[in-house]
Length: 121
Image (cartoon, rainbow, N blue to C red):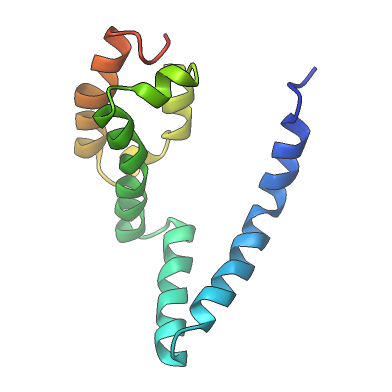
């Protein structure tokens, strides 16, 4: 069976794109029309993950939580019993934007926290 709440998480994933699109319409709609259209196009490019720039931006976006967790000595990873497989699965496309940055993150942020037990094996 599924863990409690798992079906809700799946339902949320199904509607996430729609909810994000509505939020983008609202937020970008606050800007002057030309600027709003430009920013919306950039957001769509980021979401599409087809250009080198959007892949790099996603890599950098994915680095933030890893760096924050490492900067706090793995506190959140430890508190939430995070396993390395969870981090690797969540970041399965991170290297597409920069293999060098992803390798650095694994070596400098993940490996030390695996070794000290903050991230579970």
